[in-house]
Image 1 (cartoon, one colour):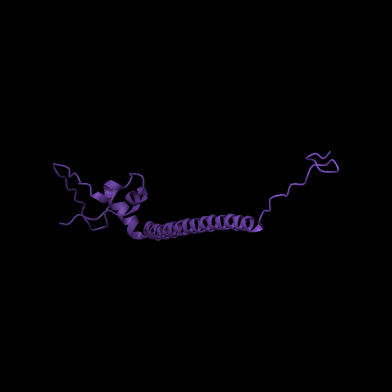
Image 2 (cartoon, helix red, strand yellow):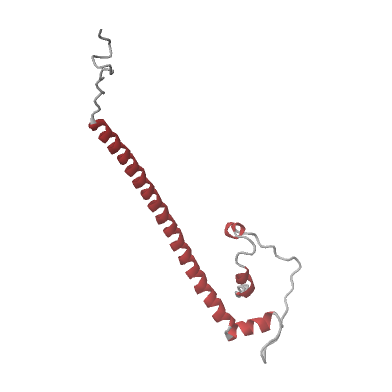
Length: 140
């Protein structure tokens, strides 16, 4: 008697489904394209951020160069005879030979009005300017 198992007692062979290699290759190619796209996008974004940082650092360097030139000018002024004379006249009340010291007093002290630029700065931002730069002479 023959059974469904075949003549020799083994199970019949069932053909395996055939897989095509094309969908696998297309899937790998799509994954590679997505990866390369994200990598290129990340590179471009990082490059854009670095250019912005470079521009900011260059602007900061330019500002620091301007500050250095101004500090050099202040240092030269502080080493000049003009500064020594100004300190002697204003702080110490000294006069040159032949000059007469005149002290003018007002009854109401002047209150300066702040400008928009002065209000935007912090008080300690440029303390050295207020300390060392000469004050303008009042016009008569």
